[in-house]
Each structure stands twice: as structure tokens, then as C-alpha cells.
Length: 343
Length: 172
Image (cartoon, rainbow over the protein chains, first blue to last red):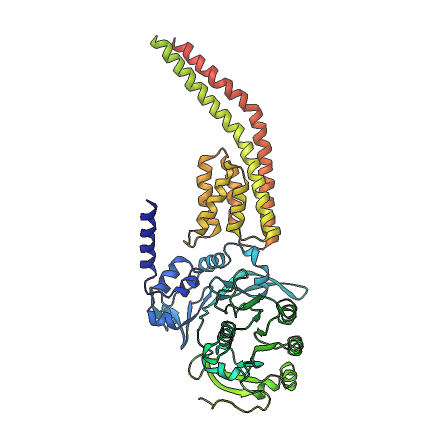
């Protein structure tokens, strides 16, 4: 009887998710059932380009694709016209709140303070609503009214192109900074560099090394309850949701890493902690928002870091050929491009 | 002979009806007390552990008396079945089934239903307030139920039997 049941269930499951990309399943499970159905019915090529889903109460449901955004149509499918779009109602928002939070809003105090939640699969859900502040600091979000569900896709091999420039002939990892405006694939690239350094790169004769990640915004490893949901490599330790400066010091003391990776350096204290790491002989991988060297130099914290003349590689990204286009790799000491500029 | 058999049957039936009425009166305060301590556990899980609701419900179900554990176990089951229902809907459904099989009265169920409406949707302080309120109300109901039990248990135990005896006497 049991065996029959199992077979039957499997069949049913296979039927339900036929042609439906698996990572997306976890994403749409935070939506009410009728919306799940509408998303499931979209064309496979649309689903492949899906980057985010935006729910705003009493406004159309926006489907963000890699080449612009459209609305979900009331009777299914996509549309450009707001009149025919599906309007998100209070019930949708309430259900999504419950599903995102696992019916436990009270367990998400920290997450609500930051304004986002990481769900299983490593996807991020941004939240807006009425903020309750206490002594000038955000305490929580009440009356949640908007969600931005960002689908995180791991691109295995995203770093293939740059890795050879990031490892010295002696097999040392260079101190590296990845630079681009938002949504250009910095984090995706960083994640893949971390994964490959951690696993080892046979092509470059690079044995795997211990990598520690301070994942303040839970984006690199996409941890859910402390467990990385993305493949970050076999020799990688992750400190999830930890403030960068403190986290780097903690990892330095506790995990004796060879490489420390962190996302979005910007504040002075981050740079100070980085200095400490640099002086401890540990290699640094980091990202920063910006589009050009000139722009970076205008930011005091980054300027200070660049003045130290220790970051050996600067990698610039943009969207000229889709997210994750590597525009240029630059020597951080001489400011000379290494690779030919690819435009 | 047939008369005697009939008389015994009537006596037994009435006696049983009386006993089960009495048992209901006995059972209700017991269940209400169990519910109170279960809600206390839930409060601890939520306020100190910040345990996600499905896990918290599982803990409570495991540690509660079997008479009330079903309510929490069933709510959890409903929540995890992936149909995208809210905690309130899961709780309401579980409560409906629990109500049918338990000794609690409509008023007690209303207290629980009101609790379910707020379950899991607000911050810790607010959840604790909701749970405390429900517990306070159940406490009052428990006191009332105990009073009723004292008054009614003996009454129904005798009434069933004596009622049966009266019927038998009239019929004979």
C-alpha cells in the first residue's frame, strides 16, 4: 500500500513540475495558490528570464524580466497595459506575509529590521510597509504592503573568464575588488569565485583553499537558518547576517581562513577591518558599488582603501551584454588594464 | 421475563446517559486547564525561543495532554501541507475538528477562535498579549466549569439512574 502511494505521489509531482525550473518552485511557494498557478503557466522562455516578482497592494503585479518588466495579466499571461493587469489585493499580501514568514512574523524581528528575508533556496524577499521606529532606529515593519521577490540564480562558471587574472603565477590569490552598479552580477561573480577557489581549479592547477565569507545581507551564500542554500564550495565557512567589520575579525580569529570574502564594502569601519585582514596575511575578495575608478575615488572610505595600494586586482562589470558582463580587469597597483577592454 | 429485561435495558440506557453527561462536566475543566498550560507553552516558545509557528506547535503538541494535543498537531499539519493557507485558516479548521470531539463549550471555542485570528501575524510582544488574553479568558471559563462540575456531576450521575427507575416504575 505504501509503495503504491509513493509511486503515485512521485508521478503526480513529476506531472506538476514538468518543464518548470526547480529553483523557481521554492520562490513561488511564498505566493498564494492562485498566483502560483498563473506563474506556472508562463512560457518557459519567460520563466528563464524571470528576475523578480513585485507585489504592491492595490497595484499591478510586476514581473521583472532580464529585459525589462511587464505586468501579470488578470486571466493569466503577461501584458504591458496596466488596465489588464492583475491587481494585488490585501488578501494576497496577507497570505504572502504568512507564507514568507512561515506564519511566524514574530520570529523575524532581525529580518524585518533589515527589510528583507532570505527564503529556502537563497532567494531574497524585500519588504516594505509602515516602519515602526524607536529612538530613531527601525524596530520593525508593521502593515506590510509590498514585496519584492528576487530570484537568485547561481551561475556556475560565471568566474571562469576572470579567474586566471586573479591568481598569481605562484598560485597566490590576489586581493581583489569587484566593481559595478547594482544588478550587474557582482554577487553572482563573487559567489562563483568563492566556490571555485574553495573547490580548487584543476585548469589553473590551483588546489582548493579555505575561504571564509561574511555574508551580511545573506546574498552570497543565501543562508536559510545558517545553512548555505547556494553552492559556495567545500572549503567555505559562512558567517551569515553578520556585520562585515565584526565578522571579518571573528573569522580571522576563529576559522583561520586563507581568503576572506565579503560583499559591498562602503563604510569606514569596513575598510578599517579590511586593513586588519590585509595585515594578517589573508587574501581579500570584496565588492563595491560604482561604475568607474573616478567615481570610487570620490568616496572617502574607498579612497582610503585604494590609497593603501594593496588591492591588486580591480574587476569592472556592467550589463552591456546582459548581467555579469566583465568589462575590464585592472591591475590595482598600476591602474593598467590587464585584459583587453571588451565592449 | 421480557418485562424484567426491558426494565434493565431502560435503567442501563438512562444510567449511561446520566454518566456521560456527568463525564462531560468533569472533562471540561480538565481540558480547559490543559489548554491553558498548552497556551503557556506556546507563549514560552514564541516569546523566548522565537520558534517558528509550525515547530512551536509541534513542541506543544508533543508535550500536552493527549486530549488537547490534537488541536496543535492538526494546525501544524494544515500549515505544512503546502496549500498556502494562513495560520488562522489552519487553526480554524483544526479547532472545528477538535471542538467536535472535546468537552469544551461554544464559549470556550470562541476564545480559541479569537486567538487564532491573531496567531503568527504580529511581533512577539503582540503575540504574548494575545496568548495571555486567551489564557485569562480560559481561566475564567475554567473556574465556571469547575463550579458547574461540582454542582452537576453528582446530579447527573443520580438523575440518569433515578430517571430510568421512574420510567421503569411508570411502565410497570
